[in-house]
Every structure is written in structure tokens, then in C-alpha cells.
Length: 116
Image (tube, rainbow, N blue to C red; front, side, top):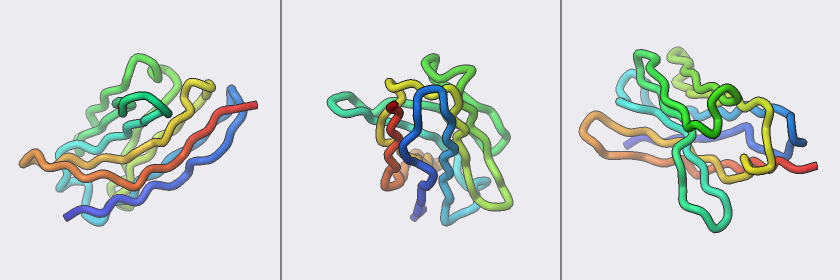
């Protein structure tokens, strides 16, 4: 069992920045892949970015150059730094932990709203 707690969402103007954090109940070294996903109203949940314990990252084309995923092993935390935010980034952002045996755990989600 892995508990995930997200924080850092909120309301920001276009062009602004937010930093999301996901803290896990287990060492992130024990988790195969940590990731951030998002779901906008009326749309399917989509991948934003993922990171492995060795630091290998993958990002969606829509966020490349603007969002950065990073891990803090000492704090069992994965962060998503979001810069140059756009209204289309508005969504509920979810943290996901995928274990080596394939099972996944999700956080409760945090709302990000980009609006003037």
C-alpha cells in the first residue's frame, strides 16, 4: 500500500508559475515510476510527466519546456514545477505511483486553475 498526498494547486494568472508536490508513504526508490497526470473537465486523464528513481523523465509534448518533474529522495517527494502556465493547463492534477509488479496508486488530486 502506498499513500500519496498532493499539494500546491491553486489559482494563477496566465504566464504564472505553480509548484506541485506529491509526498509518498514509502521511499520513492521502492516505486518503479512516479508520475503526474491531469484531467480537465469533459476530457480523459492524460500523462503530464513521469520520473524513475534513477531520474529518467518523460514529459508530454504539450508541457515540454514549461514543466519540470523532479524527485527529492530524502523527502519521498516528487515535484512538478509548472512555468508559463496557460488556460489550457487548467485541470485536476493527480500523482501516480506505479510499482515494479504493475500495480498503481493514485493521489486524491489537486486543482490547478489558470485564469485572469
